[in-house]
Image (tube, rainbow over all chains, first blue to last red; front, top):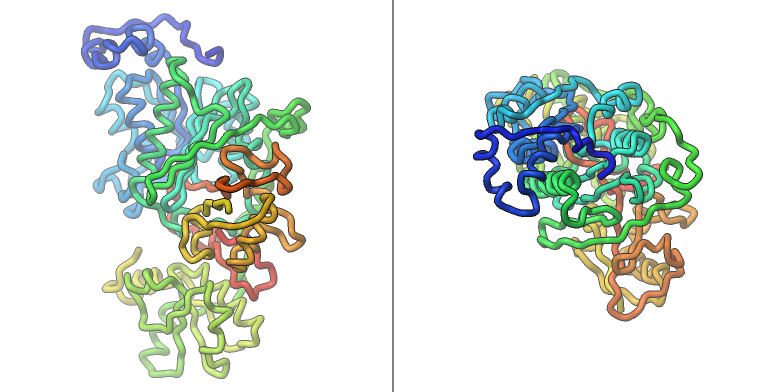
Length: 388
Length: 116
């Protein structure tokens, strides 16, 4: 591949030859391929669900230089799928935790850590010293940023994305292939597609998809096989079905088309409709703090607790509230008495804020959102209630 | 009859099915049949003025209808139509983001929006 700097002369030591022996005895890799891997410089955006298996396998396979971009800290809820991090790493920087594991697997690896959030200001600079970019991010602004920066710098974008039980993988922004914008010219409006934190994700799914990304990275480096260029692989883990769709380079694509209108990086938060910390719906509704709710309940005041989470969440923990999932609320609003004081809660306060806004529109006046949801209750009122 | 494959986020609006058999000679007609069977799914795929949402792609077999005859694309017996929305998950954001990424707006609210 023209984009790879494989012409750099590299040699393999005796130890490396032994380490990579199962690669070296295959003609598709061999000494030449293993040297290409060693000369290759791959940038992993994110060391989370996708980035974990991706970086682990690239390190083991002998990729010489791995760049890692992450600003986050390991959280207890990451451990279900972000296998590069251990229980003892909770609270540590993901970069440090990841680098430690990768070096333990392969001490020959050269790791470059970027302790930052990828942005329009730093992306081109960070990308400059890498040959291939692997996108393991979790949000639309960064996805479009990575794509555009890949097109502008002429580096392949090895893409993977997951939601619940479903994944997508492809290779974008190669010289003749389509880019992410050819597939999806515009992002969904903000706040309307849930994150993994809200929608959930099957723990093994990023493993499946991240390993596919690693496979594509290695194929690009070796120049072997048929990369996922111009193809979108759909992964359905529940059905264990894999389907493939054709992707075309869009001649009218604003970034990689024949007459590009986008020739430098833009403000991706604005492009994705995100303005600062502004919350889309339900912000500014009346709130009540968990301590205040506790006081009122203890004083036997007439407070009706409405829980707008899903039934499976209610089973994890509950405050004994009346359960009407947010989606069902419009059809079940008759179950509520508008003359009573109503406190609405969910897990963290987002869905319940929307429920409060909806109830206000429906004529309820004595309705409050429980700030921070049941997680805040667990944290500040009753430690016996599990957080999730 | 052709088969529409439903992505995970939309299955809750079609009785939790992963695929639905529909009639219709074009993609548009097939989608109309789907919406007739499951009215709740319509607003997740189309804007209020009836345009397919820009982050939802439709495929007939493995071809993107934008490069065929769009919603006029003919479908024949046994064809597979896939609904492929954009998804962004991957790294696993911190659990503090619920407020700004919350997904579901009750259908009675002002802007029904897209609820994947």
